[in-house]
Structure formats: C-alpha cells, structure tokens
Image (cartoon, rainbow over all chains, first blue to last red; front, side, top):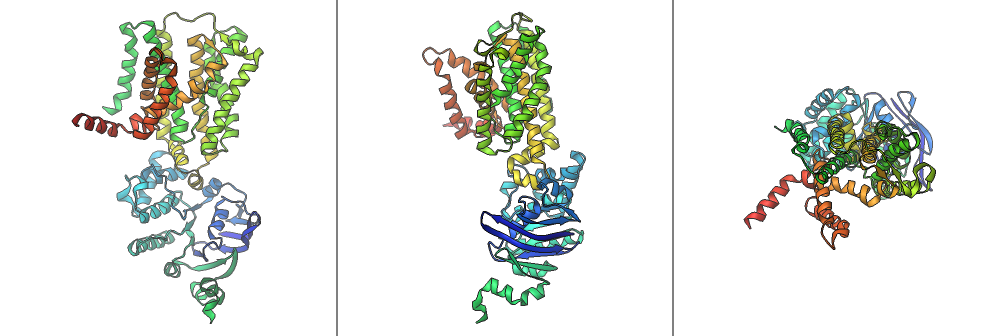
Length: 238
Length: 312
C-alpha cells in the first residue's frame, strides 16, 4: 500500500534519514521503533508531505506522493497525528472533528454526522462540547486520532499516541487501535512503549541514526542482536 | 430572541435618521456604520482566519481610488466605483496574497504594514493617475442630504454582516479557524491552507475596498495621506475589532461605536484633542490586559467586573 524507496533526508550536512526502504501492506499495523532522535518523526514528515525527501520516492497505492503537498496527500487517504498533540485549541472537540470531516462531506450536516459517529467510536462523545485545550492528555491524544479518522483515511500515521498515558488510558487507546484495524485501515505507528508495540503490531521496522537496522515480526525483532545493541548499548553483550 | 437581534438592530438603525438628526450627528452615524463594515471585513481575515493584517488601508485606498480615478478619467458617476472596486480590489488582493500569504504570524503582519505604506508612497508619486498629494475631488455631490449616503452604507453593512455569518458557519469558517489555530495541523487534515487563506484575504479586502469606494463618494475628496493612512485607517481597523471583540459577530459593531465616539469626544477636548492617538493606545493596553477577547468576547467577565465594582 505504501512504498518507501531509498529515502534520504538531509538537514544541512546532517543525514536525518539515510537510504531507508520499506513497505506497508494493506490492513497491517507496522510499528516504527528506534531510540530518540533516530529519525522516526522525520520519516513521518516525509510520508506526510511536510518535508520533500532529499533522495528517493514515496509511493502510495502506486502513485508517487513524495512531491505532493500535505493536503493533497491527505485527500488521497493518508492522515496523521502529532507527537506533541496539536488540537485546534479554541474550538470544541466536536468542531475539531467537524473541521476535518469536511474533507469528504458535501455539507455541514453530513460533516457533523461523520464527526458525531467518530466521536462515539473513539469514546469522546460525552466531551464533544468541551473546549479542546481543557481536555486531559489522554483525551487530547484520542482527539488527535479522532480528527485524523474524520478525514476517512485508508492509512493512518500515529506518532506516539500512547506516550504519557496512564494504564487505563493505555488500554482504552489499544482498544481503539484494534477497532480501527478491524475497519480495515492500515496503520503505521511510532511508539516507545514496548508492551504496546509487541501487542498490536504485525511487523516492526527498527531505525537507528537514520538507518534501517532491522525489519520483521515482533518475535524476530525481540531476538535481533542489532536491535538489542541499539537499545541497551554494547554492554548488554558482556 | 437572539435570532431576531440582527433584524431588530437593523430596523432601529433604519429609523434613527427619521427622527431628524442634524448633519453632524448623521456624519457620526455614517462613520460608525462604515467602520463596522471595515471591522467586520478585517475580522474575517484577522479574527477567524488568524492572519493579522496591519495594512487594511491598502484595500481601503485601492477601493477609494478605483472610484476616484474612474470619476476623474471618465467623468461618469463615482458610484460606478462601488462595483468596479470589487473587481479591482479582488485582483489586487490576489496579487498581494500571492506574495504575503507565504509569511506567517508577525512576518505577515509586517509585510501587510509595508504594503499599505508602499501604496501610499506610490499613490503620492503617480501624479498623472492619482493626482498625487493634490488628491481627487468629486465636484458634483450626488445628494446634499446625508440620509441617502447613510442608507447605502447601512445596506452594505447589513449584507456584510449576513455574509460573515454565512461564511463563518460554513465549511469556510471551520477551515479559517483551523488555519488560525494551527496551520500545519490544518494542512495535514487535508485543508489547502494557501487556497483558504487567499479566499479569506480576498473576501476581507473586497469588503474593505467597497467601504473605500463609498468613502470617496461620501466625502467627495481623497488624497493618499487620508485613504492609505497607517494610523487613521489600518490601526483604527485593528482597534475597532480588538476593542469590540475578535472573532465575534457583534465585536466590530460595538468596537466601531466606541472608537467613533471616543475619537469625536477626545478631539473636542481643548489642548488634549490632538493627542487622541495617545488615548487610543492607552485604551488598547487596558483592553488587552483586562478584556483580551474584547467587549463582545468577554461580555460575561465585563458584567462581573461591573457588579463587583458596585458592591465594594
């Protein structure tokens, strides 16, 4: 569904990503993991169209998207959330979701219908009249997901949607991710929370210093010496 | 009740001149309605879409000069300037938008400020087109009575109010606010931010330009220092909205009443009159500290402040 081919991204002389390739298959959850600063979010920004890659191309459903603007890519069916939540602060939860539901709605009534539907799907229905800046972090993270879902994407990019959540919020979010998967939406997830990663992902791509160091099922990744080294340092061997 | 409020106020404003106001009071009333129009149009761009313009005098001036130049060159009625200004200002806004809408936040504000000043200097020097500092004089006044001018600008105001209301409650309004709150997030939600910012700028510019074209007809005289003025047009536009309430329907109307009354009252104070801009500055500081959302936006807070003031 999504093909990332030999992507490199330079900021000045710094290679944030060098020569990374992987594919995401339809319907699966692909997790992107790696230590802080490995280039995961940069990769999202490339797929999402915020950055134009220095080298390489990104293809979505066979069409080249790496030279498209972000809003065009969203229209094609890729939606994302942000690591640092970015709700439209002085808007209610409902209005936030309506604003993105307009992308595929013919009129306001239809946009509102889509929005209400998604709010109950993501467990935010009771908070729909609240201003989004007043929500607790767990709900703001879910609002990010709801807003992305309202654009009715074929593929969802989730950037640390689980970071900073308490255990009960974590379970609610995992449940929502599973429901999204059941709808047939493909997902690419950046996450540090290993328990979550191992539980929900079908495949994992590991990035370190901007390079892909491993790819495989959760079980394979857990036993991969390169991955262990990247996370725990060489001392782990001793 | 709330639904009918606009109609009630429109009806009130329509009958006010029938009680027989003198020429000066009619002038104040016309200015008040004209500034409401400019405030409402600025609010669309600055309040809802979050693109704070310090150069609305540019659009006002281009509208005013469209009417003035058309009159001076063809000898036909300057009232043709109203429909013509829509076309002229829309084209001008598209060109300007293409340049300044790449900038964000304070950079956008500074670019618009420069745009207004550049146009003033340009109008001063294009003497064979604009008459330079001599200005353009409309020799034949259409009416001696001010009441007709009043009804024309009142009609423009009513249409503007209705237009803003429709726009804000539609897809456009949601997109404008989304862009104001977070442009990158808006873009990643599939909103073509460049396109919608251009729409906001063009709508806002056209309405302000219409007020400018009206101004030419009403005042009968324009020169670059008046219609492209930074302090008397661009800054007052922002003040009208800030005082009244940013991103509220009634804010610009309330702000316009206060600003017009204040400027008339202060100007009539002996010795202090010429310092009216100092008072505007102080008012702005007070508003920003105590009522950051303006009078309409912080109405509840204002009522509470007054109530506590009474009990103590």
